[in-house]
Length: 147
Image (cartoon, rainbow, N blue to C red):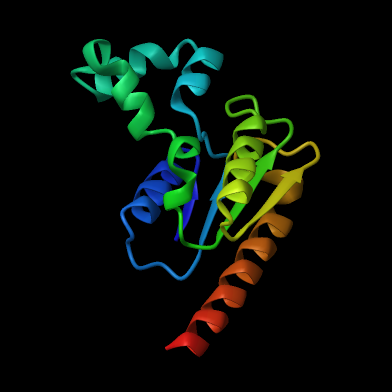
């Protein structure tokens, strides 16, 4: 499963709920919703439109939408990619999740692209895609051996 930008949250949620995945890859992933909104104040009003109960249940929503809080539940091998020039999601999000996955003993790979933007487009497109394909091939083959 592949998630880019907000799609990464859908990927994390599928992983948390044990959706049967062989591998997952994310690009430009926010992993801590509270930290993301603090860094992007305009997202506060967007969040109020997404969740009708946002003002009353902000902390609960942050908990449910912050993969760093439940990294131990991410049992699918995960490729985490971020650009260090991402104006929307700081690479710290990826670093924090990688740290939590390391502590939890989970399979992951972290790649930070020098000069990369939010979705690693432009000069990083080919390498981004190559890494994703390589990751999926590696874990598809490994999982097939287990069947």
